Image (tube, rainbow, N blue to C red; front, side, top):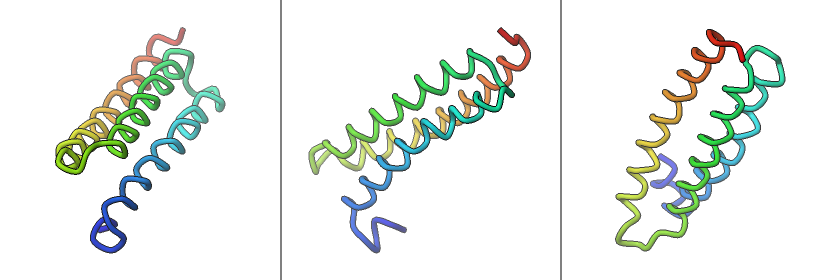
Amino acid sequence: MLPVVYGERAAQWGILLYAIALVPLSVLLFLTRYVGVLYLFAAIVLGLLFVGYAVRLLRSATEKRRSMAKSVYLYSLLYLALLFVAIMVDTTVRL
């Protein structure tokens, strides 16, 4: 709904800001000592990739924005799934 009300550019900036905020928030789980180093590594790498996708969306040309937005959306689904896998593996292996 954000692109309809405020425009596509505002939505792209919102995606970038939320992706940036997501990285330290996902690291907080490590600071609670619930998960270990494996999760920390996965959270940082996956989060930085997410920020990279958001930056690419923001810098993309007008004719490629729809496909880039779709790739950011699909990566967000993959990000969440892989982060949950990292939690499961890390709590099982406990490095």
